[in-house]
Length: 144
Image (cartoon, rainbow, N blue to C red; front, side, top):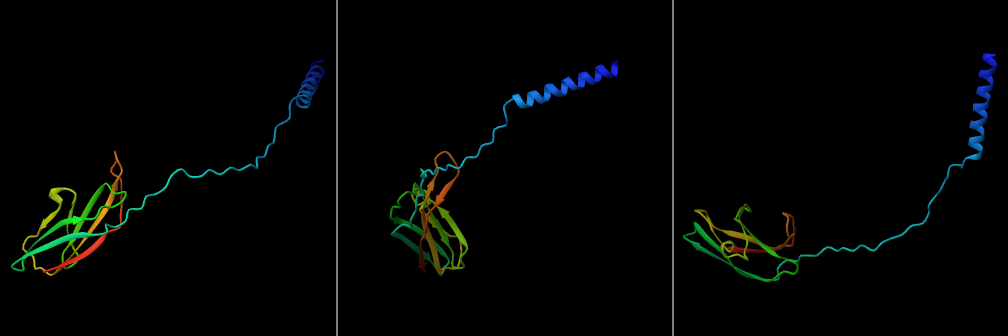
């Protein structure tokens, strides 16, 4: 009788499982096709080159030069300014901040003078970080 009880027990279990599957909820299948678009809430600022600059070069004995940024035009969206001075070979000699008194003048060591160049640009330094946006440069040359 044990095998008959086992058989009946198995039959009851199968019946309960089948009834549970039939009576239970079926699995839900869904598909979503709606789409929405949002208008971006940001924009990028353009930092143009300064419109004007007054930069002078003073030469002494053809071996020493002093370059001074006397003035430059303001740049929209800039909160910092940078000047770069290149020697006659195009090598960077100096990077300074013409909005500060100490960053307006560069004095070379003993160096053969010729046609030098400069770039002045506005930058936007992001507050509270080391990141900045760089504007387009105003380029010029100076000759002794």
